[in-house]
Length: 326
Ligand SMILES: Nc1ncnc2c1ncn2[C@@H]1O[C@H](COP(=O)(O)OP(=O)(O)OP(=O)(O)O)[C@@H](O)[C@H]1O
Ligand code: SF4
Ligand SMILES: [Mg+2]
Image (cartoon, protein in one colour):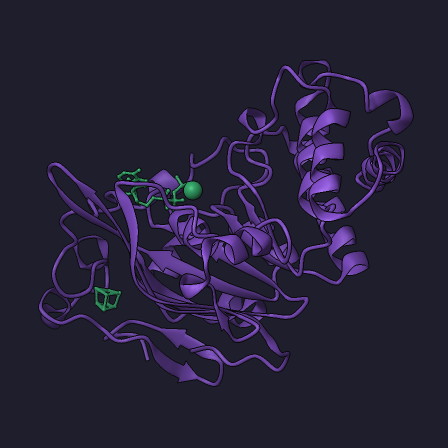
């Protein structure tokens, strides 16, 4: 897989996660490998349904039935998370790894104040008294740009704007000073100016807290501005993986090329341009034979529908799975 100069914080190796449903097995993540270095931002991109969130949830072992992690390894500083006892895994979750979920607006409990929720997160990780934990929560809310946090801490979620709620979610994810933050579409629910502010905030906090970020998004524009490397997923697999500049200048997979053509601008509605790619992501219960992209690929040759292309190093540190592009 892609080699990075920095020490590997996270190594995902040949991960398979499936959903066993009444009408078949959905192989949502089907042999995914990638790495995240210490302090590095890696973008995970691809259309809706390609397996980005299931990959993220697998890293945290939060895949619920009928889903199950079938095989693979998830190494955090060399320790396989998939074989950890549940108690140790709970300590990793929200300790070394935090996640901002795709639907932040539903992740805050409406009946508790912001303070109740951030203070609880603080006390989960630090043995502090109530007054000290409240002070720490106020500091964290200040760090994420909540104005007058001493007053805002007693607000209920419905009293805050979408952008402010997202800042609170970020504060809760960061109170444990994680080594890795997984941000799953952290801005799609927000309007354009707020999106840009939240991304700037994440970039600033990443530098300050020296944490790595796995940034999941549909938006290659966001990735271009933030990520050092990009992993492109298609149909439960890695289609291409490279340093960001290299990927943008010289994509080696037709799917990545089409994604570039469909780059949504920050001010276009979610997915509107991605729909310009002909066809749809196939059903994970029935992936196409051969290269999974072949029914939609303008470069496809006969071999593509029969044999699956391996992920190859097309040039140093640039990997792609395609028979045609070299
Ligand atoms: N609970 C579930 N039961 C059955 N299938 C599921 C379940 N959760 C996810 N899947 C399937 O797994 C596949 C991958 O889903 P995933 O949520 O990872 O996509 P994604 O890349 O995050 O998409 P989006 O960009 O829309 O968030 C999809 O086909 C989805 O239908
Ligand atoms: S292997 Fe064939 S179908 Fe797959 S991306 Fe390459 S050219 Fe297209
Ligand atoms: Mg998702």
